[in-house]
Length: 121
Image (cartoon, rainbow, N blue to C red; front, top):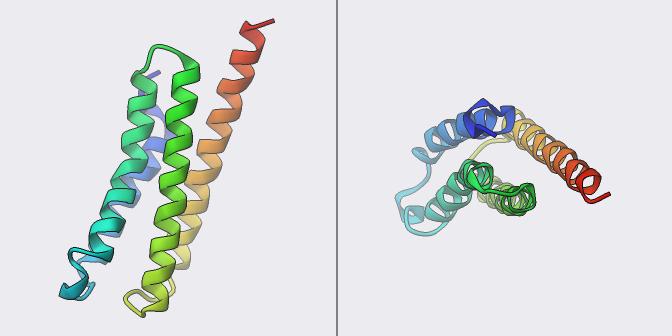
């Protein structure tokens, strides 16, 4: 499976660019704290999708997609913290994109788990 062809990977890469632009507006004092943590979570999402797709088994792919979901939850939490600290305005579109990426990831996991279950019959 080529990760570069997956909607979930494409959407998550687009989100990386969008969030990086938002981070440029954060206070300097957050450069090594919240900004850094957001960057790690953000980059982890498409990276784990790519790594999972490069694995030999669909079971391994599902594992890395699950890790990507965890990073997505971390990112959402960190962006909500930034919002509460008034570092970002209400980014309704951004949170809609996060939800879309979550749905795409869950859909891919369900698809792969169904394939795995059918192979084991």
